[in-house]
Image: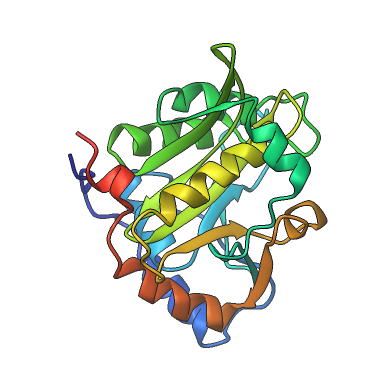
Length: 236
């Protein structure tokens, strides 16, 4: 079944994107406010934006989301993932599944004991709703029928906007990333785009590169015109 298009957002996320493209903002943080309704989130991703909490993630008080459009965007070229010999060996120890434990993956990514944990209850709930509508997906690694790693993000056409990943066993999150790349490359459509938000040293070791904001937005337009990967397009 194709994803269900939600009600349009009451916020003009495209106006924020135009301001960004015209150079009216500085830095990666470009706006604060709006909401995390499905229509708002999809409009944001289609405009090159993504949300993060604007306040403490464990606060009892709701804070408006902060919206980011990094000046230098981290992306993983689908033909450029670095798979080391050790990672290939690790992959043999795991089973990769898709969309069988989305809520569990988000919960593990949001674990407050993790260094740099940023996923609030509001964020977790918002992406769970997107998953129920068919827009957000998880790629999971399992060993002996136990979930030991995974990632989640949003798929719109040929865009996959990665949000977070976790591992409870060596290389489990990396194996999930390998699985995601395989999903996106399944039919060879070169317009697809794997967005990881920011380049880190860890992600760079896997092949992630940086694109200037303008180049990213041009690639985004091409990706949005591409179809979903077959794994999600043909899912019943």
